[in-house]
Length: 65
Image (tube, rainbow, N blue to C red; front, side, top):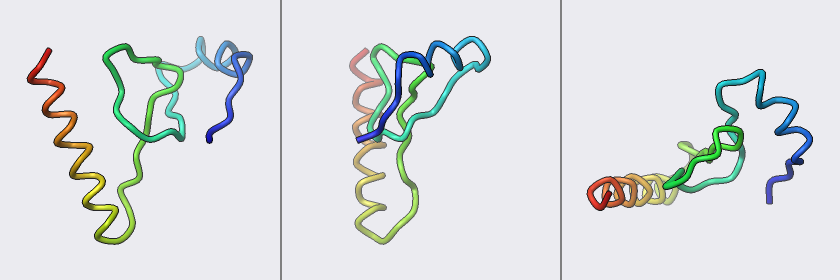
């Protein structure tokens, strides 16, 4: 589990347009620009399948909105 503090977000937020976190997953429907989700794009074939599933889920969310 990633660790971050509200104090760190308050301090960095005004200095940055956005900050990427270390938590995986999809961003939205509400997005915290000071803690954007990020996903690994490296690894073996199992990692490629996980990335593909995230892309498909993101595509389906776009079509619903």
